[in-house]
Length: 237
Ligand code: GLN
Image 1 (tube, rainbow, N blue to C red):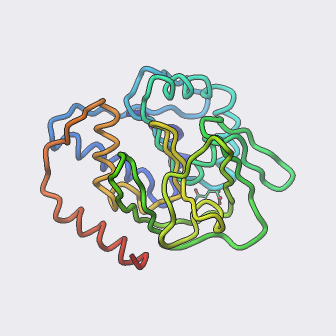
Image 2 (image 1 turned 135 degrees about the vertical axis):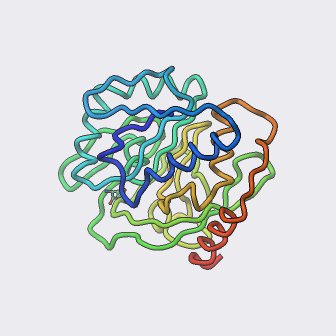
């Protein structure tokens, strides 16, 4: 696994997502090692099965956006082209789009997802959120978490939302979409952190990253199921 900007892009304990993936791999004797790529570092497109960017403040995002566009964009496109998993949360999600407009400044994005984000004057979109997703055809499931963003994200014609908002604001508080997905590239506004509240989704990512068709060996998920149920309850679903 490779974490991009783990020091700068780690709001709401988003690094907890990395820990959760590590534990669920180790508990099943799946080898796991964590690399990182920060400001100025090269990104090896073949160096990991999963690439991850957490959320961040506008100030830190600005630094990362410029570095991403300059030194990591091509590598991330190579990862996406070979079907590698890229997961991005909130500020990281915004950076996978085409642009992030902050007042008069427009930050570049990695352009992996066809979307643009504008930092609006209106209130921040804050609260518990639940969305319905269909990651595999015919299998509808719920992801639950917490959102807090000033940016409003608008999907372009070739982007698909990750899911439909059941409760909460989602991408822009208007169109009912939350996050975006293109193949194995996934962006979402959900913190929580996301994966400890949705362990089933962590397993989906691991399977996808390893190219496995069969389900992973079951774990004792009593606590994880409880965390998921609590997150859903908090969102009112
Ligand atoms: N700075 C971004 C915004 O407010 C993202 C915030 C976050 O990652 N929580 O829209």
